[in-house]
Length: 100
Image (cartoon, rainbow, N blue to C red; front, side, top):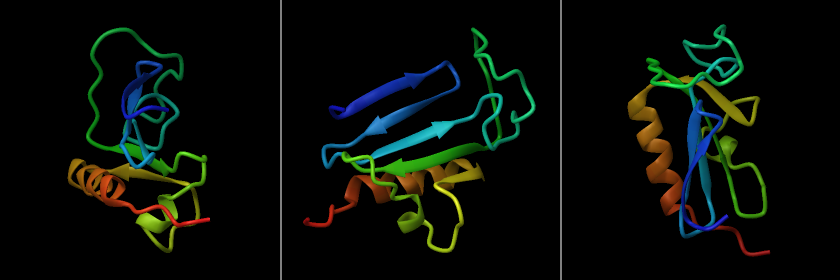
């Protein structure tokens, strides 16, 4: 994906940086957030939530979430507050991919 923004099923968004790293921020039904038990089918209109689910991956689809937060057991992090989302975005933008 080219650098930029993507809306995902009216439940969240992706941001992809020039280094090819994407951060997914999701806060709809079925996501690990305050709205988890809401209807999974996206609803039109505004939706608010106190927290969100995030995931991070590189341009090759390799998960980076565990590098951002070592010690987690999943490729997503749930119930993340806005300040931690900001930290994830800053981390992802500065990430230097490993040479293969």
